[in-house]
Image 1 (tube, rainbow, N blue to C red):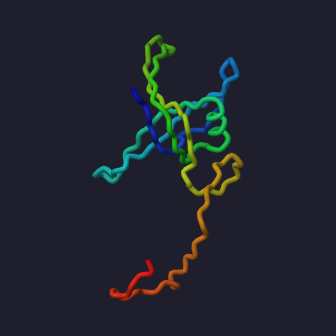
Image 2 (image 1 turned 180 degrees about the vertical axis):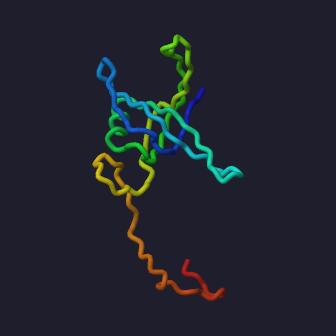
Amino acid sequence: MYSRVIVMGRITADLELRQTPSSVSVLSFRIAVNRPFVAKNGERATDFFNVVAWRAQAEFIAKYFKKGSLILVDGRLESREYVDKNGTTQRVVEIIAENVSFTGEAKQPNNNSQGSPAVEGPEMDENIDDFKDLDDDEDLPF
């Protein structure tokens, strides 16, 4: 048997790192993942997934990510049941985060020091006047 899921989406709410009674770090959060197509009405459907991270993984996410951050989650699916406050048995399916990654999304300027670090690429010269048109029969250097 094999259970593996990889999703990339935005964190939907502020993160709250918690501790179990035995002092194990745990973080539960939801991510919103846009579907790859647009409906006829012009809207894009979104799926929401529950994610649970444990120990160092939970601490890492709480330190470097926040509400609205784009995150890549690699983990496994687990289902569990619990009894809610009305006495009804509920069943949930969660992604247990085994690895998380930054997405390369540029950091948005803000006053919050807990924003995710930006992964920056090379500086690009945006002056398109430096380019020249090639004749159709001219050889390319590659």
